[in-house]
Image (cartoon, rainbow, N blue to C red; front, top):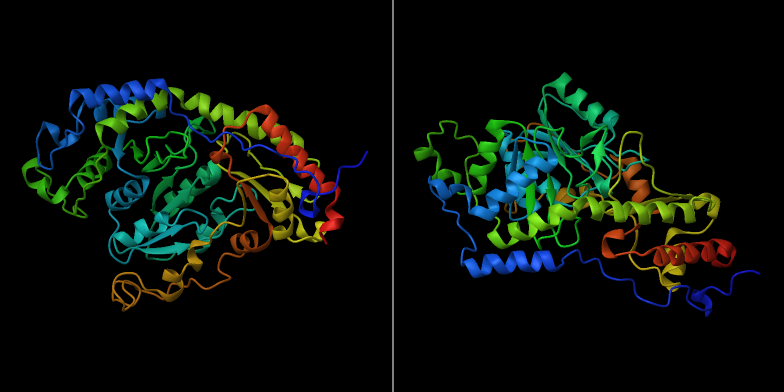
Length: 426
């Protein structure tokens, strides 16, 4: 028997209930926060050179736990991952006018962290399969002014770090990884986010580790770790008494994470493997439901990699289906599938880059002497990213939900129902 009429045309909705909102906070986190509140020590940072320059007991415990979990020499907590990216770009020594190659498929902070230090973002294209930086495009965008690459492990899958690190070594570049969406995953036996000079993760409320806001920087370089901690905590007021003589980018901030968040983070880190495994089970079940549908490509996981599925990324063959992405999303949403997104913002097409207006109104830094060439952000520089955004990419925000097997099965039923009646959408 064929499926009933599509809900878009008055038929019954496949999904009649609202899926459970993702909420990883449990009794352990409540008790941990309670203990901090009762202690009265909500923060113990001092913005001067003293034993408390490094923060209170929970900050330091969380950092040591992260070092052990991620297998790195240094973990540095910050009050947001945006702060973490700013600190990372500063710590590697970016000078005004230096170019940093970054992906257009990321949260805008990845690129604005470069601008923060008056560096120049240069956007390379992405791969069709993982949506991460395309190493060939990275190499093609290197100039005498390139100083670093920022790789983003988008949606939960690592970028091609072997290729990117090899490019960096050939050209004498630094590498930062933004693994905000990919904690607890692996790249060829190593923890995603730990292969670069500096990497890190987000603790934002819908990420895998959730403390409300926050970030974790990771590095195996002692000097970078020192500089990250200085930038985090009012560097300019500390370096003199601490004895630092290299003042490059020692303009500090208050990027400090509090004791409550770190106490919660300790409990969240204990659960991270379980959180990721649950998301992987749901994604693999959904792929089993969807992978035979014509004109739909389910997520690709490259050999040696694991995926955290912050987003479940798909690609539509709109020519084969002969139906627009917008129409397909409309039909799926009518069936009760929530959290779908057609496209993913191309950062280089945002007004700031199109008009080259950032600091003030006169086009700084692009119109200043520090910018040594005309860097283009015109439409067409990232054709793969642009086509995916405009026509073919379809994302399902798994981060929004705590999906039981029955929920996944209902999503699969909704997709199959729409695909069975695709002709009616034309």
